[in-house]
Image 1 (cartoon, rainbow, N blue to C red):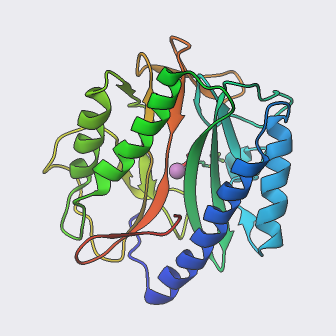
Image 2: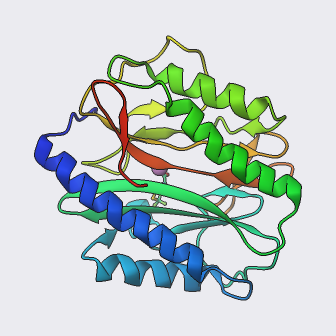
Length: 247
Ligand code: MF3
Ligand code: CO
């Protein structure tokens, strides 16, 4: 189901998005070698609640934590546990916040300590692919206009673009239509309308784009064990562009 948001819902999403943005900024300060992913989760959970929000993921389809924390070769949906963050890790933190009846969704990948130049490059290109992908998007654009640019950009550096997961509409629910793939052809797919809110989230790998899901039913990892990065924001489609709600 595609939901076009009312002005009231959009205003709530702006506020919700600020809570989420601030949570990710706080998480960035908190993450150091020696902390566990569970401690990061607890820290983010407390912060969201202190701002009057709720972590949407907790209990969503049985998901057991407030956040998704994905280290190195884990692409997305890593379940916080006793894993200890080490110097040189890249750590993706993906959070959905619920506030005033709406959800926003965003993720960052943080470099911890002495990260290799190749991994740093992966993180940077992943972030850049997001901004390239949305650069020319506005009401009347099509879903394929985003993915085609993300794919071209990431692949031009020799990186892989994960196909099995995609961005999505977000706001009234965590996952709404349309799906927003990070690959494809410009000028194809659903049209984006003014007032739609979508999460655009490139998941880029250093090697193969092939991924699998672990036995826990959640953790998505690269088949070749190479690192992967994730960058995501929720955005509002406007008449002449987009407004990023989680930045
Ligand atoms: N941002 C993630 C996604 O879009 C998190 C969803 S909540 C979870 O898939 F419960 F599925 F983790
Ligand atoms: Co998402």
